[in-house]
Length: 86
Image (cartoon, rainbow, N blue to C red; front, side, top):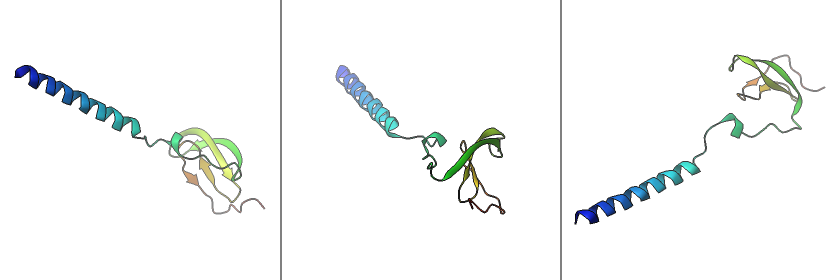
């Protein structure tokens, strides 16, 4: 009877490990790299500037409708005097 219990325990552990592996493979991490990119039609140009959130020089884009966004942290930086592409 003890061999039966050991085999049943091993089979249950194998199923549990398989379920955990399947659950982990379907989970998607929340990473800036997985966020949708800026549409090319919206961005006027790219430039390197200091990001407030990252505290280092990163790549930024300037939008046609006004404003700037960091491409690393996706933080939008808008200025009040920005009028867009006129």
